[in-house]
Image 1 (cartoon, rainbow, N blue to C red):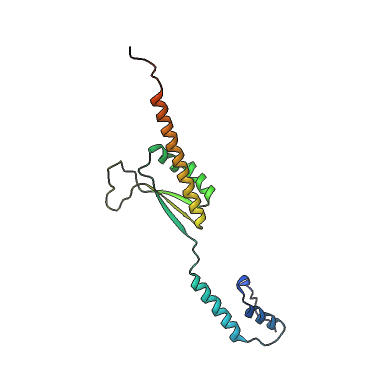
Image 2 (cartoon, rainbow, N blue to C red):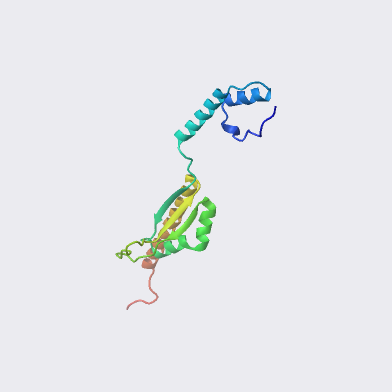
Length: 157
């Protein structure tokens, strides 16, 4: 005699459970104590492993970065490009405060809040942001160095 659908667990079935299913399909008797013990063992194993994390987050302070680097990583196009590349979501939070100024109680300096379903996505997003920031700072330093070495249009006589 046939029972309900079953088989939803699929991957995590133990040998005892597989044997029980085979016996059931053959019309034989099933030793429920073995089946219950196998189920309890699997539940205990899952509990020992802890809950499966599906939310990872990180924050990156960007308040003290040069303005153009902050603008670059917080521009709408760059935010969506980084999110698409990494698989993590990125949100700009807080407010900009000039150097030496502290935010009022309950406020925070501007930062990037990064969240994703995997640790890898968050890590990838963070690395990409840091790479872009570093690139922007290097461009700025190169530009400033060139400006300093360029002779002026007019020379003092």
